[in-house]
Image 1: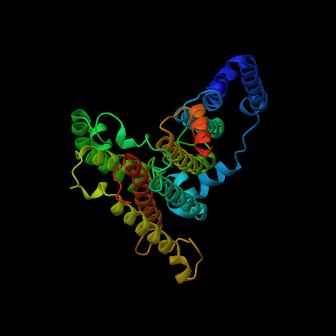
Image 2: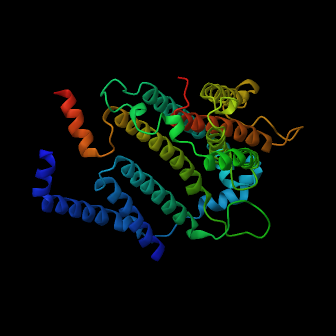
Image 3: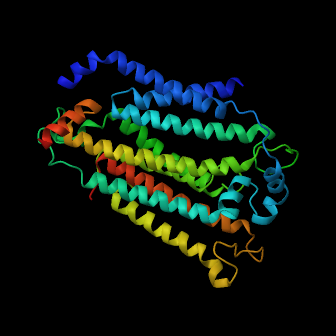
Length: 251
Length: 114
């Protein structure tokens, strides 16, 4: 409390500090945001002319991040894997023994599971969950020719899994809301992604090279394959984090 | 020009959330707003040279630059990771102190140390 009174006494300096910080950030960023220089058209023209022919995807963004830049996408999924691992580690070793009296089970209204569920939420989320899962599969599998892709579809699938785990009313009969199952899905789909990236090594055309050349599978098949694996991995990973934050964890 | 000024204002709102708000959850909201502002700025820059989505069909010749969009896909994923880690750290702080206020968290943790 002494700190707080001190804060009141020096509040004019506190406000001055905040104002100076704002002025500094605005002064630095004003030229960045109001930059009106000419944007180069070289990359756009090259991709428009050659992108679909070289990678097979009509969606040029998909053809960049799964064709030209697939190695970077592998690193991106590894970043997501590390973030999921860190989040699960921090949550599962949470400091319940650090300060007694602030334990989450001591609050009014029963324990956490009862507190977060209402009838309205259960009805709405339980009915919407499967529909959102179907939509997520659509976004994931049609990412090569429409807006979407693995990451976007995976996040929609994660929303569906969160809805299902909110809507099952605390019963444990839905296998998708078990965190152990989600962890296994994530691990297996990441393994499949690495194996799919190594197909090119076996056939001698290089890491992440497209092994399908239209006979019999068209080249876009590789992008659909990678999109499906990335979508499953991202969906399971983000749903795993969220289900663990909801407290339904058997860690 | 008005869209860029609005983006700068949105950035400053996120910055305000980070440095002024005492609630840790609101600080994370500010961080997310900063991230979204940068994503929108890059997409806006890429849309200077075209007006159609970069999905190739007939008669859509001036497509926008797809390179900033593909780059921002990475930035969105990193933003999700940062938000998740920050939320899990806040979860742990709340479990050990019982509050979201940054000043109370500091005073309680220092009290526990002594």
